[in-house]
Length: 65
Image: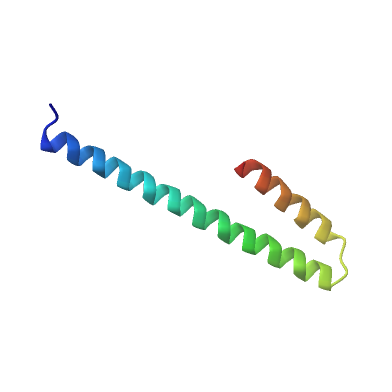
C-alpha cells in the first residue's frame, strides 16, 4: 500500500517530466525559428551561407528524431 507521501512524490515527478519536456520543445522550436530566419535572410542576400544554415537545420531535426 502506498502512502500519501509516495503518491505525492510520484505526481511531482510526473509534473517535473512534463515541465522539462515542454521546456525542451519550446527550446527546439525557438532554435528552429532562429535557423529558418537565418537561412531566409541568407537566401535573400543570395549568400552561399544559406546552404550551411539549411544543413545545420537538417542536422538539428535529425538529432531530435
